Structure formats: structure tokens, C-alpha cells
Length: 390
Ligand code: PMV
Image (tube, rainbow, N blue to C red):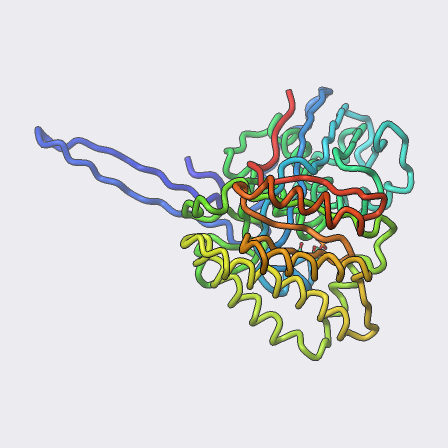
């Protein structure tokens, strides 16, 4: 039976007299509101158990910057899911007596981290309506990242995605959930933890936010594209150059807020829709030149938005600019379609096709590593999304 609000395609075949006729009935039920993620009631059995998931980070090509109430994005975005930079989270759950408050312990890289408690508590409050078992169990949460701690890489996307998948896996023990609903709801929950985390559940590329050319797109969760991307973008490389490893100068929350009353906000949101339309064509055609143009333009626009908000910020460092100029020179000289993108910080993601890996890696080691903090960079590539660990 179709599940509540789930996108469901049921094919029914029937045979009429001696002629074999096949009738295909398509029953489409869309998830189109938050309410569709509220489960019908189920019991909270006196059980305990352990679940473990790993979820990757992701890098946006068309950026999400600016949001409305409840983590709804002001514009649609698209990202590559990564494969090596990930969070691994284990959740041990056990039924408790009282069900009037949340109860959990959290450790990160083997150390108890009470300073993370408020963030998790806030996340639990936001998702309680959709996971009614949350106050009935005690959770012991162990988490670690595969990338260096304090590397300046935002870990909230992979962390929120891994935790959401663990919680969905626990819910799946109490009630039946199809795979499709499981992953959509995990993405939906992750979004409530950290917006871009909803793009860290499934394999690459992932679109989040409603867009007229993508029928399945939603503001509530990330979706895969319904066509095969050009082979030029398979195993796309992302080498992350760690220019600045300190605390973020501007938190995402503050940054997104700066888009309210921003003089260029409306034009920027329109541009993101157009860039997403254009990059869809690029994913089909394999056009590297267009890819480079859209991706670098998006990175610089994101930073331009920060430079022109009030208060204003410059999040790039001198070494960020030095790296960008060297990438441009190298591209001009070699004609290799290598490009950069930036998050809301000084680190540089160097993006390039798999078949130029050797040339670009030598260039990075010989010319760019010197501009990184302690010469550090992380080699990564596009990946297939999160996995359960047995
Ligand atoms: O998910 P948040 O709230 O940390 O925002 C992330 C915003 C950017 O990384 C700058 C862009 C994006 O789309 O990932």
C-alpha cells in the first residue's frame, strides 16, 4: 500500500481473457508538506540497540545563501556529494522510564563534549514532532570525522546527516518505512539541523530547493537528478586546500541572516535559479567551460554578498587570492579545466576531472601547498552518499 504522502509508483499488471494486456497504473503521491513526515502512532518498546552510519560532506556548486523560517532556502542549490571527508556516528539507544525530557551523552573523537549538548538539544526539539520516540530513550552518541579536527572544513553537514540517518534507523525498528521515505525523511531531518546537511545523504549531484526545471525538487529535502550525468563529471576530483584552519569568522546563521534586507538579495536569488538551469544543461552536455564559468561565478558571488552586506565581511585571505590567481594561470597555460569554489571561508576547493588527476595534483603539491596552513590539503572526490556500518 502507498505510504502516507510518499512518492509512490505502483505498477499493476492484469491479464484480460486470452490476450495479454498490460495495464500500468501510475499512482503518484508526493510529499509536499512537513506534515507528511509525521508518522502514524507506534509503540516505544522496552528495547536497546546500536546503529551506526557514515555520511559525507558536500560541496555546493550553486550556493545556498539566505534562508526563510524553518531552514527553508531562499534559493535552490546543487552540490557534489564527497566521498572521503565524512562523519561516522554511532548511537546506542535504551528505553528509559520518564518520557518528559531528552536524555543523551555525546562524545566526539573519544572525548565527552558537553559544549555540543545545546546544539543537539536544539536539534532534538526541532525534530521531535517527526520522531515521537525521542523522549522515550536515552542515547549515547559517539562521533568522529575522517578529516582533521579544526581543519576549517564545515563538519555540520556530514555530522547532521549521519545523526539523522542513525535516528531514522532507530525509527525503522518501531514502524515500517520504505527506503524512499527513509532517505527523504533523513534528508528532511538533517536540513533542520543544518540546511546544507540535507545534501549529504545520497550520491552526487544533489539539488535542494524548488526549481521549475526539476519536477521532484523540494525546499524540504535534497533530491537526486532524474537523468544520468555526463561521464565528464564522474569521479570529479575535489582537493580542499586548508588556507585558514581557525574558527569560522562568520557563523552560517549570521551569514544567512545578512541576506534579509540585503540590497542585492532578490537579483542574487534569481541568478541562482538561472545558474541551476544552466548547470543542469552542463551535466547533460559535459561542457567543462560552462561548468568552470558557473562554479567560479557562484563562489565569487557568495563572497560578494558578504562583502556587500551590513555588517560586511571579507572571508578570503591573501593566500586564497594567490591560489585563485595561480589556478587561473595554470588553466590558461595547460587548458586543463580545473576551477575553484569557496564556502563561507578562506579555504579553496579545487575541482577537476578525474583524468587530469596526476597533472593537477603535482601542480597543487608544487605550487599551491605552500599557501596552505602547514602545507595541508585533503584529496577527495565525488561519492555515492551515506552508508550504514554493520
Ligand atoms: O548549511 P549551512 O547553514 O551551514 O550553510 C551553508 C552555506 C554554504 O556552504 C556557504 C553554501 C552551500 O550551499 O553549502
